[in-house]
Image 1: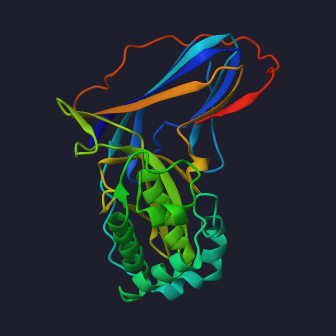
Image 2: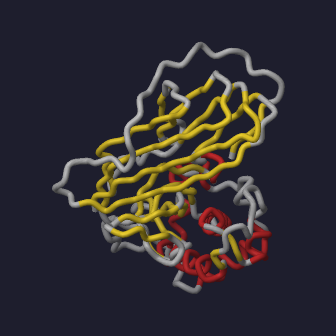
Image 3: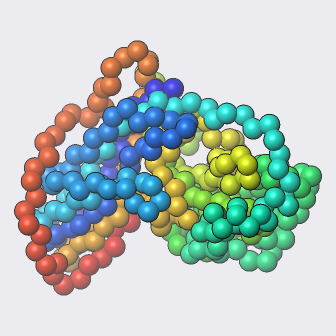
Length: 316
């Protein structure tokens, strides 16, 4: 599937700020399931980008605005080709998770984090679900994905970033980040390495806005991947209770949300920001040339940065 994506974030400060330094993670990765065809970022006020690949393999676009500004708009445009992952026929036993080399290779994705700190009750529930499917890894992960999708109700505003996953589970509601964190926590609690994934989802269900002409307006999406011995990473979307396929576009992965936030930054000044973010995705005919959803704007050189004054506050 050929998809054109436009991610737009606008920050409006209630008072001008003197400077901001920002990191954007919005570029789709190229892997065995998808290929990035083109990518462009524009910033207003204009700024020069410094791009690099972080520890987890995600492209990061860093930019600083060193002049006073009350608004900041970032637009990332990408074209990508996606396909469904190959079918898995093997079903390794749960005992295969104990292989020393496998454990060493996936150590970072077995430990609890701020967003995935489970308790014994969650681990017990995960063990029961895994045992119900005959104790093979693929079956266990599938059962956990189904449990998360059925246990949580999709409810924007029900949770806040940083809310303990045990409280999310008790509340029984959340958004895609919560679904992904719960899936990761349950997997790790029984020794299945799992990682949080940030991306986009081309969907026109009741949670998105269909604009017409193959164009939908959505938000960034999240799911999780579980490591299966001999097979690699199995990607599942608990929010929609399905396997990740050609409608999913991956940006990057990490231990949890904190490793792959779409936009993160600091600023200097008294203003408080109000954030507005949206994603537009158009399904394209593969024979057509890449097109832009937004009008182009120029990137200008940035002035030499100066020392940030007074406080620096986190942008989420």
